[in-house]
Length: 196
Image (cartoon, rainbow, N blue to C red; front, side, top):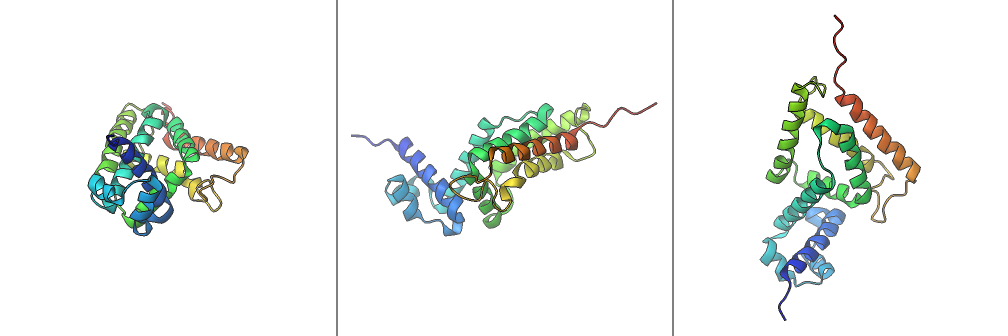
């Protein structure tokens, strides 16, 4: 019977995501990843090279999943911010993975930079067309949107506090989501027309 390498790779990536989100890169153990994936530890090295390359694959997969789940629209940045918030509510462990990445490997990878380039260009075009306030550099607009969308997930007792999910009520999450959307609306609103 032939082995299904794509299924094994998917199990390894799922197990590695959980392991890296829990322990970071330095604390993650290949043995635990293999055991959780019900795979031979050697396959991690065959498919991904080493633990750091496995982390890169996990991060790349998370970026791709995020791009699919949270489409970017420069003409609806408040909606984009709300969608980021919703995505993180559904996957609070993703914020832990991002925080570990920032702690252990600051700076952006090629994949991360590439995912932002198109968004920054779209923001710049919307600013030039007057649909977004041009007082803030496009890269800073995107940084603010992402930062505001993620802010509550780093809060003590926030949605990313535990593997079991959020202890926050649905009403509290809805209030925070509304604050995210309103903040981004204010940040990006075009200036009022000049009075002549």
